[in-house]
Length: 59
Image (cartoon, rainbow, N blue to C red; front, top):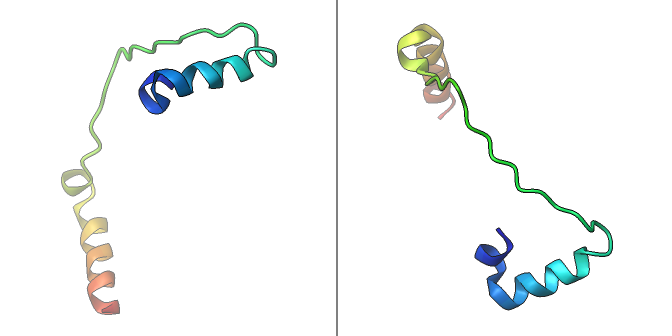
């Protein structure tokens, strides 16, 4: 991540300064076993419509 954000030279400097405070780092990968999509338009259409009406009334 440091290399992507700071470039090679910046990442090396950052890690050299960080190493005394945190000598060991680990990379963690998370793989979800389930993914859901929250579709508020079809699941809660009346609440969405009321919110949109409130916004239009405030304009």
